[in-house]
Image (tube, rainbow, N blue to C red; front, side, top):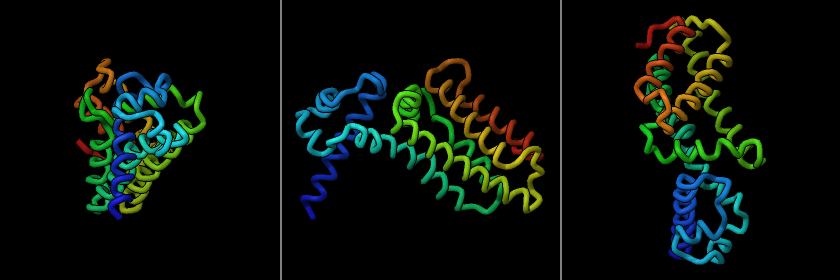
Length: 199
C-alpha cells in the first residue's frame, strides 16, 4: 500500500512539473528533459512513470476536466433553481484572473488542437461535456417555465461554452476584457437567450 502511495506521489510530482513547464513555455516545445529538469529528477525516471509523453499530457489535462466538468456538475447538483444553476455555471467557467494556472494551461493546449490528435480529442470531450451541463440546465428551466429560450438549448449551450473560452483567453492574456466584464457579458447573453433577467 505504501509503495502504491509513493508511486502516485511521484506521478503527481511529474504532472505538476509538466503543468508548470507548459504554462511557462507553451505546450509545443515541451520535451521529456524539460519536465525532468522542472521536477529535479532524471529523464529516465519520467519515462518509467510515463513511457508515452501524450499520457503525461492527458494527465495534465485531466485537472482541467475535473475543474470545468466534474466540479461544476457537482456544484449545480446542489441546487434545483435553474437560474441559480445557470449563474453558478457562468461564474465558475471563467478564469479567476490572469494568474489562474489551470486556465493558462488550457490556453497553451489550444494552439495544438490542429497538430495533435490527443489534444484535439481532449478539447472536444471537455467542450461537449460542458455543453451538456449547460443544455441540461436550459432544458430543465424551459420545462419548468422559468426560461423562454430564443434558440434551441443546444445552440445556446454551445455559444455559452464558446464565449467562456473566448473571454477566458482575454482574461488570461490580459487583452481587452477583464474577469468582471466577461462575467457581465455572459450573464447578459444568457439573460437575452433565456428570457430571464439573471442580473
